[in-house]
Image (cartoon, rainbow, N blue to C red; front, top):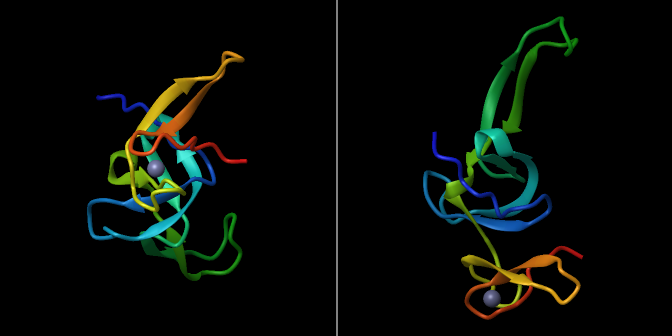
Length: 110
Ligand SMILES: [Zn+2]
């Protein structure tokens, strides 16, 4: 299995770049690094039937975001307002930060 380097973090704003949800934007809610998948807020909703009993007491249909493969989403640069490639830059204090390869903007959540 190919291990993708995940350069996306929780609360990042991303755009879906392929698949049926292409063009949708949302915030990263959850990351599954071992599966290379992410959950994007309000993107890729699926209907799931739940049965009475177990963890959920009432049965019915719930809508839930399904995970997307990390290669299907791209980080949006706040400055370019576009999905961009991410690069890394080492800061003077030794920490490396993500930068936009297009404009050089630092893409860390504050
Ligand atoms: Zn940029």
